[in-house]
Length: 355
Image (tube, rainbow, N blue to C red; front, side, top):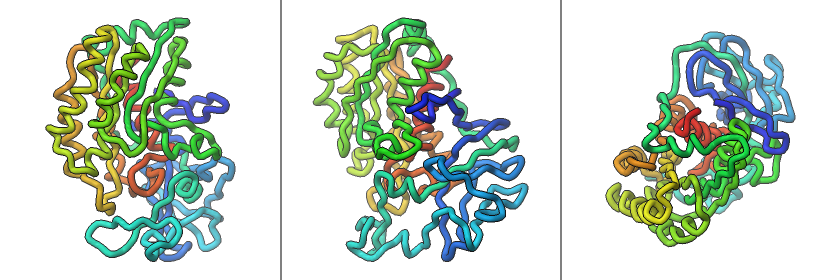
């Protein structure tokens, strides 16, 4: 699956989540008690020394001068004179009320580092490398024709297709570099999905985003009429992060999602719907709810059926997060994706739609 990486030049680049191919611009966040012992871990084992760049892709770092890699491992380490940013444990747990601090660390009086916009972006690096190890993320199979077949049939050259997205701040494209007005100006997942479908099918994709930061699925019910008024061919519904932070039960969450999609199905029977499960938040954050994220995904799966599919971001995100630090793929340190994370979202959705 090819993914849009630079909105400004519409260059296509892959997001590798399977064995035996290229991983491009995987994000990294180096941590250590000094620059010389700061480390980060790749998702997979490179075949040879990876290419490291700044998150803006404007600076290329040099092996030996800026970092070292031990062949046969996923481990990277900075040199004493490295140009690559890093943070110490103390900097990730700053003093109360200091810049970029957040009072919400679980079971602790410590504060947490919080870096929205380009703050986190500028602290990260990227890695590009070939790998042939045997790790892969959960397999994503295209939704059956009973769910999305008519959408695929409509994705043809010159055909007009309208996508409406309804979700929380993640779906507003928060903390994607384009939203932060910084290189490489990659948009968030809704725009990535729309642009990638347009590039790969030739269809004329129109995107309308009704999402709003801080909202949960119960709020989404109030925007159902607006979604219907847009007359979408594809309706993407993506809540869960704020529901989990509010400790909504899977049953309450599922009921709210159902109340969003049932009126749309009734008013627009030809509209196809994709339910998107959420990424996971920083486990140190007191409002994260790792017990709920997979249960929400299970609840969404039970709502699928005729015209309704699930894009299970939770499963893919969890698999990647088990091999990397949360700060590697976070856009703000707490609960938003960075550019790489938005590409994870887009990749799962596009693979759910299928060829």
